[in-house]
Image (cartoon, rainbow, N blue to C red; front, side, top):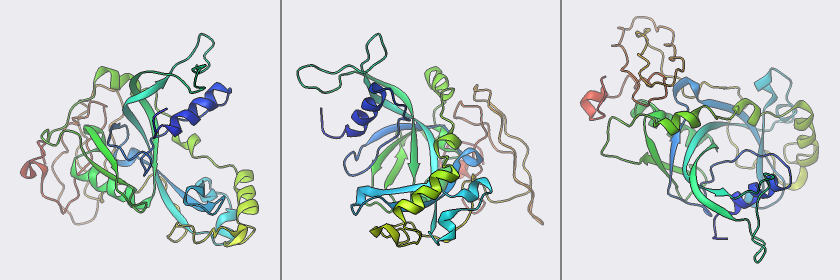
Length: 310
């Protein structure tokens, strides 16, 4: 097996043994990319979750996180012992040309009897989950505003070389300022998105066990520095708000020209004493959602060469 597909192997093993798993996008030092992706949420549809970081061992790869129970309106054992909180941004994305595990008629993964390795067939586009930390999430928020929505085009994603902001993200076709509507196959894949609330769910029992086992009932418990495990920021709850556009006077609803049949995003509440902006343009993504409004201090996209109305 070629170096770099360890995550695919592990996932295939889980399926082969009858377990369930959610495929995820891996961008790090061992799989730096570039990879081509199509992001399937933007604007206020982006999912963000408050999480507590902890470690299950001394190595960098041993970092883990669990969702703060404040997300569910419950007392949180992580908050109770002072674990710091960070915000994770979680997205459904289409990963282009992802290797596909070969399966028998029984649905189980096929191994090469000579090597013991799982066998892969032709690659195909597949919906996977991308989960990134606060700095990378902030970068995505800026791209969402600059390009009038993360869903408007394919992106090239690479490992940045640092774990602080782990991604670099640029349009796959930088010459196409207007973006490219979703293909018919993309629309079929859009219907297969994962429930990210379920993906990120941590039960009260799981949270309590994590704190007991790995944090020792204190932020520094377990010998792995729960409080100083690289997760900074004061405890806070910020579900699904990190990508909200700055509040302005309510614009007219965007025209749904995408063909996905999704609901058009509703405008934000009006800010006092502001002139109402022009109606946002029809969404060029093809997914049936409104284009993300540009930040009010940014130049109008029509003047900046983005190929869409301001």
